[in-house]
Length: 558
Image (cartoon, rainbow, N blue to C red):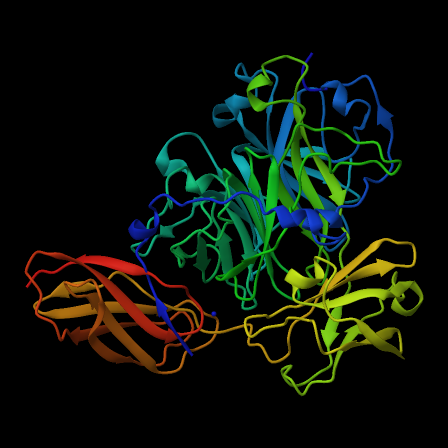
C-alpha cells in the first residue's frame, strides 16, 4: 500500500555575455566558525509535539513520526505549497500532489500532479483537503493589492501551458484560470538553461506591485501582479558555489527582502538579503540542510530531502514557520504503490527581535555610541529575558562569527530596552543597509534581529534600458523606471570598444525624470564612425543607484 520548499554609473550587460560558464568555488571553510544564529537554519525550532505514529509508509529513518504535522495520507504524495491565514484565523494551504494511480511514482508529477486546497485551525496541522483545484504543480499563493488571491502553478509539458495562475476574490473560490505574460526585455530568460518557469516565487512591494524570483535567480516586476512581469536583472542572484539551484522562495518583512534557494544536489540551501529586491547579499552559512526536522526530545525525522521551502509570516512580515516538501528516499526510488512517498511538514521559526536604531546620523569616527531599541512584545520581555553580555551588533559578516560591537550599558524605556553599544568593531560600511544583532537569552537560546539604518533610502528609482536599436547613424534607447518612486533627470552615456579593446564614450544624452513605471525613448547620434553590418558590444551607463552592470551586443546598420 502506498502513501500512508543600488550617484554611481551602472552598466547593463546583455546576458549572452554572462551566460558563459561560471567558475564555481567550494563552500568556504570559515563557515565552520559560525556561531549559533550565524546560519539561517539556526532559526528552525523543534516540531510541536503530536501523536507519534509507527504503522505508516516510509523509510525507517522517518518512523515513528508526527503524521499530524503538515499533511499526509495513504493515497496522495503531497508536494510544495504555502499557507495563507485568513482574517478569521483559519489557515489555508494550497499545495499539489499525485495519487497512487500514478504509474510513474514521484517522477510522474509532470503528468499527474493536481492542486489541492487544504485547511486547518493552526499553522502546523493536520491539514485536510477540502477542494481539488485541477491539474497543476509547484503551487504558490499570494494576495494582490486589490485583495484578490493568485495561485501560480505550472501544468503539463507544452510551453503554452506554463506560468499559469488561478485567481479569485475568495480563498474558497471560484477560481478563474489565466496565464502570466512574461516580458524578457531583451534579456535571456534561462541564464544558462533549464526550465526557468517551474519554480517561481512572489512577494509584494510597498506599493502593491509584485516582485518575482525565478528558478534561474532572475528578478522580475509586475505593477499589479497580473500585468506583465518584466525582467530586470541579467545575472543570477545565487551564490557562485557548486550546486544545482531550484525552488527559490522570496518574502519581504518590515526590514528587508529575503530569499532562500535550494541546492538539490547538495541537499542544502542558501540565504540572501536585499534592500530593494534587485541587489542581494548572500549571507554566510546554510539556510537549511537534512536533519532539521527535530522533535523536542532531540529525535530526528530523517527525511532524505527537504525541498520547496515556503514561508509563513507574522503581521510584521517576519518568518515564523517554514514548510517543506519532504521525501523519505531519492525521488527516482519512489515508485508506484511502494512504501515510499512524500508529504509537507511545518517547522516553527524563531521570528527574531524587533529592533530600531536611535542614532539619527550615519556612524563615523566621531560616533561614540550606537543605540539600538529592542521592542517588548506580548511574549517577550527584553529586560527580563536577554543575557545582555552575549549581545553583539554590527554587519552580519561580523556578528555571525561572534564579533561586532559590545554592549556598554542598557536603559529601560517602557516595555522596550535600549541597548547602547560601543561604536567600534561593528564594521558597518557604506553599503550596509540592515545590520544584525545576535546573542542569547538567559536560557542559552539564540536571539537575533536586523534593523534598518535610518539614513538609508530603501525605495529608489530602478532605471534600466532595453536593447538599443541603431539605424541611420542614430541610437534609439528605451529606458524604463521599475522603481516605486519617480527618478530625477540624469544622463545616459553610450560606450563602445575601440580596436584596442578600450572602452570609449560614443555619445551622451540627458534622460528626463521618469515617474514610477514610466519610460522614455531617447534618440542620440553617435560620435563614432562605425562599420556597416558589424556587431559591436555597447555599454549603456545611467547615473542611477540600483542595477548592476549590463552589456548589449548590437549590429550596426547604416
